[in-house]
Length: 178
Image (cartoon, rainbow, N blue to C red; front, top):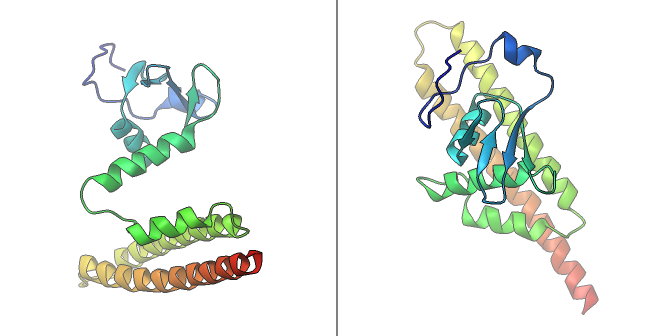
């Protein structure tokens, strides 16, 4: 392990020391809104948090003052940063529908639905990659792109149906209350 600590130092890879550490890596958020990685002993950015997610490194973000777990809030900031730059994953309509689901009786259902959908998508991606490893002479990029488009269309169709029902249910409830 390198003993130099600089702002540009790349994080060390997981090793025996990381395996011996119990629990997730702790990132502390200070009142000055800076994030401090207690494993790497340096301040980190949202880009660094994104890297931890991409590398599947388990971590927890704790507010230094209140000691509250604010990991979800930081992850939402990472998503907002990603959505703001380049091509967004979530459409304006999708985000509006998610916002409308808060406070409704379907909030828990919508959350579980979205989580299960992304798990299904990831599992299908893994299965496709595994199949391609065993197939010779097939262009995996074209095939994966086509399947991803098909999965996206299916997911979009189910999403439209769920949010259509949600909208109708909320509209019916509001009509009754008037």
